[in-house]
Length: 133
Image 1: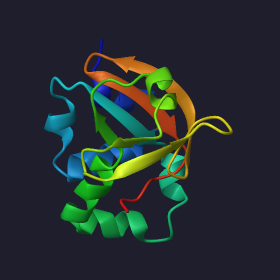
Image 2: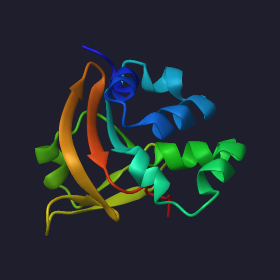
Image 3: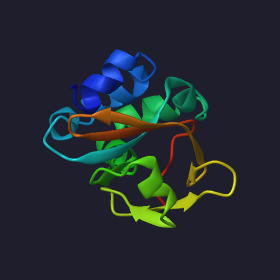
Image 4: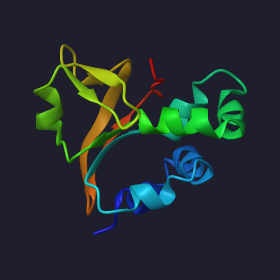
């Protein structure tokens, strides 16, 4: 079974995320044993950011690393585990709020596909890039 990074690459809808992970030097870490829970923004989610935002992040590696780590939680949390919590702490250190009122939202992002299993964790696809608080 492929790992989190390999799964994102093969999906084809996470080109911006994969490029950002590579630029931030996090490829090896996220390919490690984990387990990780990744809330993965699609290319469309990155496209919703203001003009120049992605380029700005690619030029500010510490900020890029913080944004990316804000999408990763230590441990393997399936959708049922996520939905049972009010918040979870990210690798970046901030908490993301979980709201199950209308589907599942993490901060302001909707989970559009959940429980994509990998050999070192799980991916939940989200429609918005989450920024650290």
